[in-house]
Image 1 (cartoon, rainbow, N blue to C red):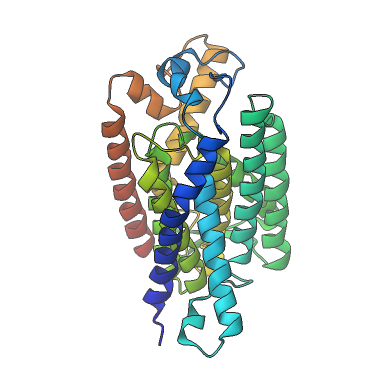
Image 2 (spheres, rainbow, N blue to C red):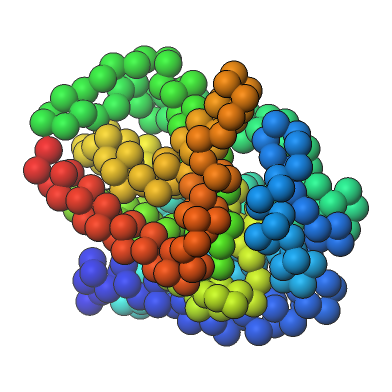
Length: 352
């Protein structure tokens, strides 16, 4: 008899094991094809040269492979496929209960994972092989917007989501505005993908957030969703095993786009559909991502309207790095803060 706890942890362990096993092959291929930028350097959001960022990281851009996010989403998809096939061919086996594919809980986040990974992969490929800059930002934002509007419509029209949960049994009715609300949340989360800027940082932050939402889904008896979130966390930990300083490869867009868009879907599924407050606690659990986005917004706004910078360099983690905080120390502190915030968010949800 497969217990609910086993259903959560077994796929996560399988995804971690698969990720560890496939990484040497992925890494070898990335190094063989020299999957790094041929023209180092980065532009700021206002189109000017990101001088401080380039001073910190320009050298590493021509010797560290990109596309490390392949390890994450491929581990998740292979795990989901293996467990689904096991359930299909051996439906009477106790192991069939490990299958977490379900239309009501995991189809949407798996779809966002696949589509985000595919477009992110194309962006990384263009960045490596062609323009050196990847797909234009406006094109990526258009893709994220259209996908988010489609998913938002699905929540509204097919799943009858018309409101978001508020603490203490409250509710904010949005009606059809739930569609643009989801799109805005997805865009904000996608923007937070720039947290993938220091070895080990993004992996630790995302693993903590998905683990927290696995706990939320488990508390809501959404066991398939909890298993998916745990599986994603397991895959991220396998990536992180090789991404800690000095990194074997970087996550880049094929990882961050897949994870941020999937997180948006997970957050919505853990809200009213799960009779909970998954959206309300996102600013707490996802504060490292929120702070990353806000630091960029504040920096760009200050430079445009006041002609001065608020931070030494944005996003926030580079501000601390330029201030003299060692990379390893900065990364571990982000992990600690992220873990404490996840615990605080879960506590707030349980008492809401």
